Length: 158
Image (cartoon, rainbow, N blue to C red):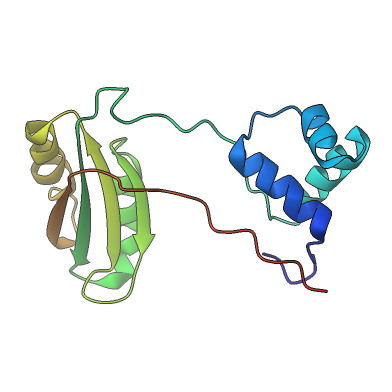
């Protein structure tokens, strides 16, 4: 959250409505919260401008699209200064759906989706390991997501 924007109860309620259903029409949010439609539009515009709402997006089902395997991979680099080139190479692999800088033994941590384990092996050994500057990867297979959610909307400070 940005330092200069302080959430109030209306903002919090709008954010919770959007988290429950990002496609919910603003008019329905207004009715649900007993406020005007124009106030909902104004508040959402301010929340976007403040960087609190980054984007609204459709969440695709990995399994629904045929990705039966997924994994988390820690990446150890030969030299950290090469990470910019490595990240650009990783970005070109569409099956890498998340990439984080982390502390600890890895420099980067990836989430990878694959059609099956053979496809996952190809991504790891033929695409990722072939990137210059990567020393080693360590992969953990994901057997299923227990839950996934956004961060909580903080309580309103009074």
